[in-house]
Length: 221
Image (cartoon, rainbow, N blue to C red):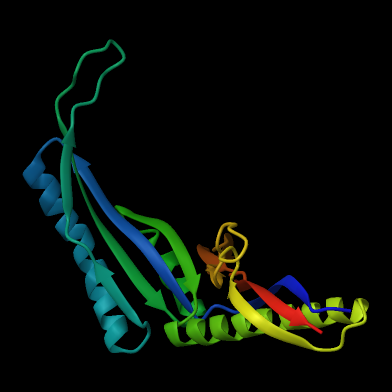
Protein backbone atom coordinates (compact mmCIF):
# COMPACT_ATOMS: atom_id res chain seq x y z
CA UNK A 1 0.00 0.00 0.00
CA UNK A 2 1.29 3.47 -0.81
CA UNK A 3 1.86 6.19 1.77
CA UNK A 4 -1.32 7.46 3.46
CA UNK A 5 -1.95 10.79 5.18
CA UNK A 6 -3.89 10.50 8.44
CA UNK A 7 -5.44 13.52 10.15
CA UNK A 8 -6.74 13.10 13.69
CA UNK A 9 -7.81 15.08 16.69
CA UNK A 10 -6.57 14.48 20.23
CA UNK A 11 -8.34 15.68 23.35
CA UNK A 12 -7.66 15.45 27.05
CA UNK A 13 -9.10 16.97 30.20
CA UNK A 14 -8.17 17.07 33.86
CA UNK A 15 -10.04 18.09 36.99
CA UNK A 16 -8.03 19.85 39.67
CA UNK A 17 -9.08 21.04 43.12
CA UNK A 18 -8.95 24.84 43.38
CA UNK A 19 -6.15 26.37 45.43
CA UNK A 20 -7.40 29.94 45.83
CA UNK A 21 -10.74 31.63 46.35
CA UNK A 22 -11.20 35.26 45.34
CA UNK A 23 -14.12 36.88 47.15
CA UNK A 24 -15.63 39.94 45.49
CA UNK A 25 -17.54 42.37 47.69
CA UNK A 26 -19.05 45.80 47.29
CA UNK A 27 -19.82 48.42 49.92
CA UNK A 28 -22.72 50.71 49.00
CA UNK A 29 -24.49 53.76 50.36
CA UNK A 30 -27.18 56.09 49.10
CA UNK A 31 -29.00 59.20 50.22
CA UNK A 32 -30.28 62.66 49.23
CA UNK A 33 -27.06 64.53 50.09
CA UNK A 34 -23.86 63.79 48.16
CA UNK A 35 -21.53 64.81 50.98
CA UNK A 36 -23.31 62.61 53.50
CA UNK A 37 -23.22 59.64 51.11
CA UNK A 38 -19.48 60.02 50.49
CA UNK A 39 -18.85 60.28 54.22
CA UNK A 40 -21.07 57.29 54.85
CA UNK A 41 -19.29 55.05 52.35
CA UNK A 42 -15.96 55.93 53.95
CA UNK A 43 -17.27 54.97 57.38
CA UNK A 44 -18.68 51.66 56.08
CA UNK A 45 -15.58 50.69 54.11
CA UNK A 46 -12.94 51.55 56.71
CA UNK A 47 -13.56 48.61 59.10
CA UNK A 48 -13.53 46.20 56.16
CA UNK A 49 -10.19 47.52 54.92
CA UNK A 50 -8.69 47.44 58.41
CA UNK A 51 -9.88 43.85 58.87
CA UNK A 52 -8.34 42.75 55.56
CA UNK A 53 -5.07 44.52 56.32
CA UNK A 54 -4.83 42.75 59.68
CA UNK A 55 -5.61 39.37 58.11
CA UNK A 56 -3.00 39.86 55.40
CA UNK A 57 -0.35 40.81 57.94
CA UNK A 58 -1.24 37.72 59.97
CA UNK A 59 -0.96 35.52 56.87
CA UNK A 60 -4.64 34.57 56.91
CA UNK A 61 -5.14 35.59 53.27
CA UNK A 62 -2.94 35.87 50.18
CA UNK A 63 -3.77 39.44 49.19
CA UNK A 64 -6.60 41.93 48.83
CA UNK A 65 -7.39 45.07 46.87
CA UNK A 66 -9.86 47.94 47.00
CA UNK A 67 -10.90 50.27 44.21
CA UNK A 68 -11.60 53.96 44.55
CA UNK A 69 -15.04 55.08 45.60
CA UNK A 70 -17.49 55.59 42.72
CA UNK A 71 -20.10 58.31 43.21
CA UNK A 72 -23.06 59.07 40.97
CA UNK A 73 -26.60 60.48 41.14
CA UNK A 74 -29.96 59.65 39.63
CA UNK A 75 -33.37 61.32 39.62
CA UNK A 76 -36.02 58.63 39.96
CA UNK A 77 -39.60 58.87 38.68
CA UNK A 78 -42.64 58.41 40.85
CA UNK A 79 -45.74 56.45 39.88
CA UNK A 80 -47.30 59.59 38.41
CA UNK A 81 -44.41 60.14 36.00
CA UNK A 82 -42.88 63.02 37.93
CA UNK A 83 -39.13 63.36 38.42
CA UNK A 84 -38.17 63.28 42.08
CA UNK A 85 -35.23 64.85 43.88
CA UNK A 86 -31.79 63.42 43.04
CA UNK A 87 -30.61 60.35 44.93
CA UNK A 88 -26.84 60.06 45.36
CA UNK A 89 -25.06 56.72 45.35
CA UNK A 90 -21.56 55.60 46.29
CA UNK A 91 -19.85 52.24 46.10
CA UNK A 92 -16.41 50.71 46.48
CA UNK A 93 -15.36 47.31 45.17
CA UNK A 94 -13.20 45.02 47.32
CA UNK A 95 -11.61 41.66 46.53
CA UNK A 96 -9.75 39.29 48.83
CA UNK A 97 -7.84 36.10 47.93
CA UNK A 98 -7.98 33.25 50.44
CA UNK A 99 -6.17 29.92 50.46
CA UNK A 100 -7.91 28.73 53.63
CA UNK A 101 -11.46 28.03 52.50
CA UNK A 102 -12.79 27.51 56.03
CA UNK A 103 -11.48 30.96 56.99
CA UNK A 104 -13.14 32.38 53.88
CA UNK A 105 -16.50 30.90 54.87
CA UNK A 106 -16.40 32.36 58.36
CA UNK A 107 -15.17 35.73 57.13
CA UNK A 108 -17.92 36.06 54.54
CA UNK A 109 -20.52 35.07 57.13
CA UNK A 110 -19.26 37.91 59.30
CA UNK A 111 -19.02 40.67 56.69
CA UNK A 112 -22.35 39.74 55.09
CA UNK A 113 -24.08 40.97 58.24
CA UNK A 114 -22.41 44.39 58.11
CA UNK A 115 -24.39 47.38 56.95
CA UNK A 116 -23.89 48.30 53.30
CA UNK A 117 -21.84 45.20 52.42
CA UNK A 118 -22.90 43.00 49.52
CA UNK A 119 -21.18 39.74 48.50
CA UNK A 120 -20.93 39.72 44.71
CA UNK A 121 -19.41 36.27 44.28
CA UNK A 122 -16.46 33.95 44.78
CA UNK A 123 -14.09 32.81 42.04
CA UNK A 124 -12.18 29.57 42.64
CA UNK A 125 -8.90 29.21 40.79
CA UNK A 126 -5.45 27.65 40.63
CA UNK A 127 -2.23 29.49 41.34
CA UNK A 128 -0.44 30.70 38.18
CA UNK A 129 2.34 28.09 38.56
CA UNK A 130 -0.11 25.23 38.97
CA UNK A 131 -2.29 26.45 36.12
CA UNK A 132 0.71 26.62 33.75
CA UNK A 133 1.89 23.15 34.79
CA UNK A 134 -1.53 21.52 34.43
CA UNK A 135 -2.20 23.18 31.08
CA UNK A 136 1.15 21.90 29.76
CA UNK A 137 0.43 18.39 31.03
CA UNK A 138 -3.05 18.33 29.53
CA UNK A 139 -1.78 19.60 26.17
CA UNK A 140 0.91 16.90 26.14
CA UNK A 141 -1.71 14.25 26.89
CA UNK A 142 -3.86 15.54 24.03
CA UNK A 143 -0.93 15.07 21.65
CA UNK A 144 -0.42 11.52 22.92
CA UNK A 145 -4.09 10.78 22.25
CA UNK A 146 -3.65 12.03 18.68
CA UNK A 147 -0.59 9.80 18.20
CA UNK A 148 -2.50 6.79 19.56
CA UNK A 149 -5.42 7.45 17.22
CA UNK A 150 -3.18 7.81 14.19
CA UNK A 151 -1.38 4.60 15.10
CA UNK A 152 -4.72 2.79 15.47
CA UNK A 153 -5.92 4.10 12.10
CA UNK A 154 -2.71 3.01 10.43
CA UNK A 155 -2.89 -0.45 11.96
CA UNK A 156 -6.48 -0.86 10.80
CA UNK A 157 -5.36 -0.55 7.18
CA UNK A 158 -2.28 -2.70 7.55
CA UNK A 159 0.35 0.01 8.03
CA UNK A 160 2.86 -0.20 10.86
CA UNK A 161 4.72 3.14 10.99
CA UNK A 162 3.36 6.65 11.48
CA UNK A 163 5.38 9.84 11.23
CA UNK A 164 3.99 13.21 12.40
CA UNK A 165 4.05 16.02 9.85
CA UNK A 166 1.85 18.70 11.48
CA UNK A 167 0.55 19.32 15.02
CA UNK A 168 -1.52 22.37 15.92
CA UNK A 169 -4.17 23.67 18.27
CA UNK A 170 -7.66 22.62 17.27
CA UNK A 171 -8.90 24.63 14.30
CA UNK A 172 -5.54 25.69 12.86
CA UNK A 173 -5.51 22.75 10.45
CA UNK A 174 -9.24 22.37 9.79
CA UNK A 175 -10.25 26.06 9.89
CA UNK A 176 -12.66 25.38 12.74
CA UNK A 177 -12.79 27.53 15.85
CA UNK A 178 -9.47 27.29 17.64
CA UNK A 179 -9.47 25.62 21.05
CA UNK A 180 -6.15 25.96 22.84
CA UNK A 181 -5.78 24.62 26.39
CA UNK A 182 -8.67 26.05 28.35
CA UNK A 183 -9.19 26.37 32.08
CA UNK A 184 -12.74 26.69 33.34
CA UNK A 185 -13.00 28.34 36.73
CA UNK A 186 -15.04 26.59 39.36
CA UNK A 187 -18.37 27.95 40.44
CA UNK A 188 -19.15 28.85 44.02
CA UNK A 189 -22.06 27.30 45.84
CA UNK A 190 -23.18 28.69 49.19
CA UNK A 191 -25.63 27.30 51.66
CA UNK A 192 -26.82 28.68 54.97
CA UNK A 193 -26.16 26.59 58.04
CA UNK A 194 -26.77 27.36 61.68
CA UNK A 195 -23.73 27.62 63.92
CA UNK A 196 -24.07 29.27 67.27
CA UNK A 197 -27.36 30.80 66.16
CA UNK A 198 -25.82 32.70 63.22
CA UNK A 199 -25.90 31.75 59.52
CA UNK A 200 -22.56 30.51 58.17
CA UNK A 201 -21.81 30.31 54.46
CA UNK A 202 -20.52 26.88 53.48
CA UNK A 203 -18.76 26.81 50.13
CA UNK A 204 -18.30 23.61 48.13
CA UNK A 205 -16.22 24.49 45.05
CA UNK A 206 -16.25 22.26 42.03
CA UNK A 207 -12.96 21.05 40.65
CA UNK A 208 -11.50 23.24 37.93
CA UNK A 209 -11.70 21.65 34.49
CA UNK A 210 -8.64 22.06 32.26
CA UNK A 211 -9.09 20.89 28.67
CA UNK A 212 -6.93 20.77 25.56
CA UNK A 213 -7.55 19.68 21.97
CA UNK A 214 -5.07 19.38 19.10
CA UNK A 215 -5.10 18.38 15.45
CA UNK A 216 -2.30 16.38 13.90
CA UNK A 217 -1.36 14.95 10.53
CA UNK A 218 0.75 11.85 10.08
CA UNK A 219 2.31 9.93 7.23
CA UNK A 220 1.58 6.23 7.53
CA UNK A 221 3.58 3.55 5.74
